[in-house]
Amino acid sequence: MSDDEGLDRRALLRGSWLKPKSQPKTATETKSYDRMKVTRPPGAVTEDQFLELCTGCGDCITACPHDVIYKTGVQTANGEASPVLFITVSACHLCEDTPCIAACETGALVPTDRVLIRLSEATVVPDNCWSANGHDPECNFCADACPLNEIAISHESGSAPNIHEDGCTGCGLCFHACPAPGKPIQINAV
Image (cartoon, rainbow, N blue to C red; front, side):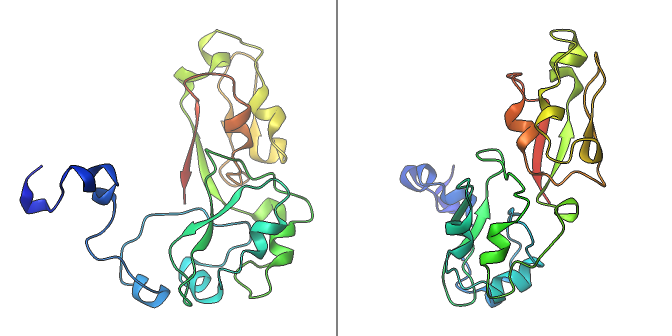
């Protein structure tokens, strides 16, 4: 890398190349900045609204019984880090009573039926699937792990799972349940 890019070895190791040259300080400044897609807790309003309404209090984090919400996101309007999920690190369990939503008093998380929650997008790489590639045609871990089962994912012996885009919440439970090292189910922020 050249000195023109402003990165030395220390900056490279700190991940400075991932960050924009001038980081926004508040949610208002963030609106004009093309930020990375992040996964918000269930029931999150639009990103701009979320950053205006969320106070960074951490109540949703404390309420999560599975400890899958982290306070590391872009700063909220009052300067606090915001809550995010890292679905490939820890799956959201789509709790029936959605305690994270119930804990939010600011309106950043709104009551949402579990089947309407959209956290991320799941896609399938069939060649990596044990059922589809013949390694274990009866493997069904992904579909068995899904809390919305046939609404979100279906699977037939000897084939790759079929993710139903209109029913999949992107919770990541299928991703974590899959024993295949190549992870045929891929998770992307929406």
